[in-house]
Length: 326
Image (cartoon, rainbow, N blue to C red; front, side):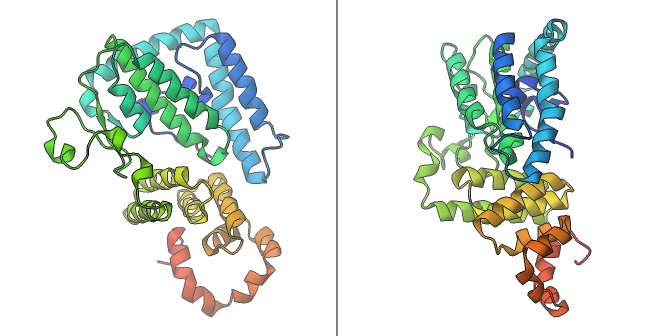
């Protein structure tokens, strides 16, 4: 399975090993080792936190393809020195291309607008919050790595600027509109409708159900246009409000299945079924992934599996999974 990350430094055809481990850019080898051991215990096949076969497979992918290579890169002296130099150059390059860089997270936007004396503290505080939950839910790990990498990119830019606060890169929060700032204050059409980002916290929104519904609707529109990455971002953002929302998990599973990321699809389908064992999208998705196992564990679903029933409800489900029926 391809572990695709398209934020921050990863967006520049580069692997952000610090983001993978959730350690600061200037972390010592000792700190890197401590963090690596903690993550490795979490991802070990015998970890009590891993409860399904899909999670076990995903944990193995994360460990072998991201975590182990990151540890090797950041603890071998020669490679670490070369990597540090590349990071410095990446920061300088990003400074020269600020107009082309779009930030998608609130944390990165706040760091970009911070002052010379405060940016280092804000960076460490934001990184700590993200790293705490980085490997708690493996279905969220890739997204959090991307968020950390975006934070790292801004931090490197601040270092290259000597901590200067202007001009900050534009910030676009996944089109969800919770806190969008773009460029400087000359964008009057946006600043007229949005006050300072800090005053527009998610808690000022009407209800959690309404927030989730908006994310789901935006994700549906993105998916209809074939913008699967945008749809995934919307649904992941929605899960930050309600990590146990079955609709979001089943829709994420469906999109991952359409994009042939089967391990991620299985993780989200199983999460959806934990919330609602009769979730039709999750049931249909698992039937496509492992038909024998799912039919055995859901005998009641076979009663509804007539040709007529599939014709009635299957169009939406198979359309969602990108099947032949369209």
